[in-house]
Length: 219
Image (cartoon, rainbow, N blue to C red; front, side):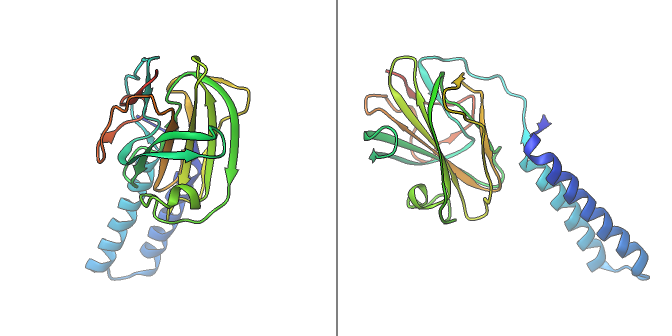
């Protein structure tokens, strides 16, 4: 396991703050009681939780050009037919993955292709598992032209606690399956919009992992 680059400064700052607080307690508190010990224990647990949030576990990535691989860790919360108006501009299937605070939060490309469209949209911070969050929350959209000429849209959606979406996509860039797309901090969701004829490989409430779990077949 390693720590994602987006978390190194935050982890260092959190560790420094915890160290200063504990040092001040040691200097200012003459008599320690249960409350003080519990407070310090809570600070240490907080440090571990922040570190765990930015973890990148070692995985054997899927190598499947004929499938869309999940771009995120989490739970499938939406599978429905919708009209995507910004990039695909047609009826398509939407598969949405909700990432809780305990999930790995790195996002990856689900397939090989060329980035044709990148757009950041400001918005609200509703709970990311709610359907309306896909259209109303702050989000980044990445349109991908597949090798077979079809198109998909990947949407990173901020949640109630997620205040920063990081997206590495650049228009015109050639990308490969499981390459890093970006990162979303502290709870969020990722939507994938795909052609109607792509057979879906998941069901609602399925748990998926980025770079491992197939979510649809590429037709």
